Every structure is written in C-alpha cells, then in structure tokens.
Image 1 (cartoon, rainbow, N blue to C red):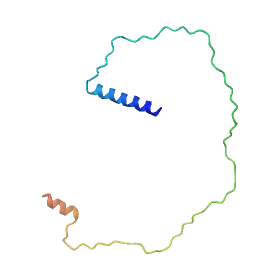
Image 2 (image 1 turned 90 degrees about the vertical axis):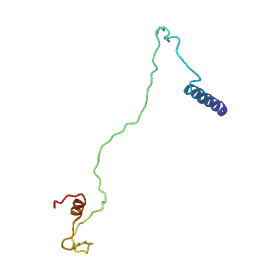
Image 3 (image 1 turned 90 degrees about the horizontal axis):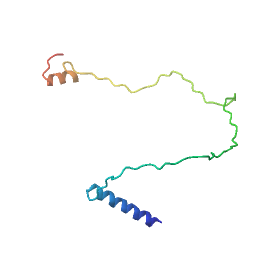
Image 4 (image 1 turned 180 degrees about the vertical axis):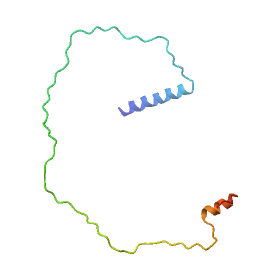
Length: 104
C-alpha cells in the first residue's frame, strides 16, 4: 500500500515538474456542465441524544489562602554617585562638538 502511494506521489511530482518546465501544456477544450438531477422524496435522518445536565455557578467555601504583609525596614541598597571633573563635557555636549554644533 505504501508503495502505491509512493508511486502516485512520484508521478505527481514528475507531472508538476514537467508542467513547470513547459513540457506539458494542459488547456481546457470544452466547458463543463452539471447534469440535470431531479430530487423527489427522501427523508433526513432523525437523531435523539441523551446528554448530561451541567450546571455552572458559584458556592461559598472556606479555604486557607496565603497572605502577604508589607513592612518598611531600612536596608543598604546599591548606589552610584558620579563626580564629574569641572569643565568635563557631558555626552550630549561632546556629541554636539563632534557634529560642529557649538550650542550648549
């Protein structure tokens, strides 16, 4: 069974390759037309399904939940202090000077 599918796949790839290279040209020579069909009688099938009754809602329950308490404490945190030398250019001033802009 796998061999048949493999052969059909290979044939399809060969056909697609031949069409893309212009070796095969498929063109429609006649318009298609649906047959005239008369429908009479018949009956759709009937079904009956027994399903469960599902109720969705809320109810009050007592459960244990964790609580978080906030309190202020003094702790040491990292701090950065920069003392620039007097007359040192800031990044913005240095960039303006490089661009030829003399405004400060």
